[in-house]
Image: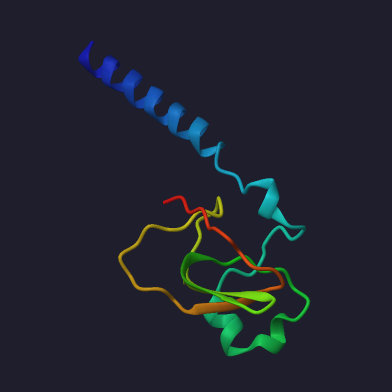
Length: 113
């Protein structure tokens, strides 16, 4: 009887795990059109000419913002993303930095950890 209860518990736990794994998906706002966008910033940095025209998705944390005349410059410390496009929580340092400029000033930034 005890073995049967343990088997039922294991089966229930496995069913819940399978059900929850189906919930992992990339948000539509960042999905893009490629089923496998490039996510390895180091590879792109080492050979950018190989990735021209391809979709990429990089994650990170904004570490510096500079409002300049007519544009805003963001410095982003990159972190790897999981299959759901969420940052992988790891203790290792950033893999690189992205610098980007936007045409208009940012008056505020909202961040969620």
